[in-house]
Image (cartoon, rainbow, N blue to C red; front, side, top):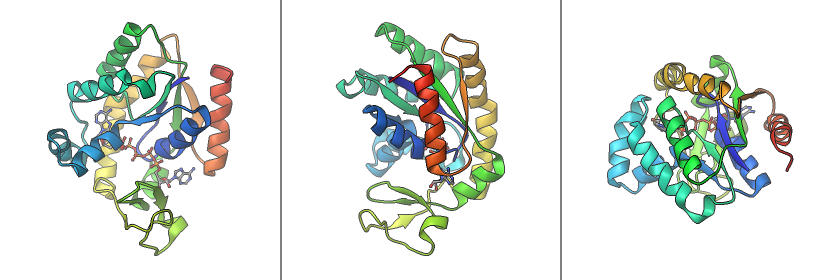
Length: 217
Ligand code: AP5
């Protein structure tokens, strides 16, 4: 199963992408996670990505396409994948199509998680991530706790989760990523909109039904 999971920042792509990947037994491929790992390891890619990410702008397409081509070439993604946060521009979508065409593969579904701007701001301003294991949570769930319930390391706020940067990320989403939905909408695979509000379990239920409708598993 080859899925693209789309939606604005904070729509729940990471949260639901992890669950979908586990359910489908395929890897979740998140370009955001790959870039954050490169930053933690202080690689050349990480240094390049830092300024873009901290200001809410997109990392250049050629950099992202090089990164994703390498990952899709690997053995882990052979049996399928859940793409999270990629493609984010029309040139990235065209690049993905070329990569899949060369492998004689195609996408099974493009799922678009829909949430309002107010919900995005509430979710991201309260998001906390574990600096060691990457677990994602929210202050509504953990309250004043500063340690990860899974590994005990520190919970921190992502540097791009300030209200000002989240607003810029929403603008960038509308300017550069919303056109990707129109691009897929007019292609064979189409786009399935999924209500991203409600509990995590409710949203997951809607997503699994959409996946089954796209291609019975
Ligand atoms: P990336 O990491 O991809 O960020 P994003 O798309 O902005 O999405 P987020 O990770 O912020 O949110 P999410 O939708 O995964 O939500 P989550 O599940 O965490 O990208 C970061 C940056 O990297 C970009 O700005 C760009 O600079 C660069 N980049 C990455 N990919 C790129 C690309 N392809 N091209 C160019 N540049 C790229 O949930 C959010 C919060 O809500 C959490 O606290 C969670 O607990 C909570 N939550 C989840 N579900 C629910 C629910 N149902 N109800 C209530 N709360 C919920």
